[in-house]
Image (cartoon, rainbow, N blue to C red):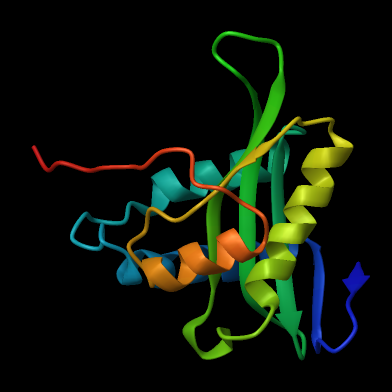
Length: 157
């Protein structure tokens, strides 16, 4: 458990008791994204969340305020397609709308960075592809030392 100065939140690894709240938060997250018109399949997400919990190469951290989970981050380790070099990538990164504007998002990201570094990842890939406050999110990520190395595009087929 990590307590950071000037923050009323607690940051910790998710445990099985968080499954239901993370499930519900992901449904809220989905409704905010640019993909909200695609149906959320409970069984598909339950399998994904179970995988995040069960794999040593996956990370799932939460931020709590007053005993309530208000944000989370997930990600995993992978080898580059041309090398045995290990890197880490964020997958889901979300803070409830009413809890945004503070340090929770950055501190969740820092928690993920510490985990990835401890697993000997050489770099971390992260960003936003949800369409939620992209300009603000990008500025935040860049202030934390990340550099843009490409872009992501989507085309509906």
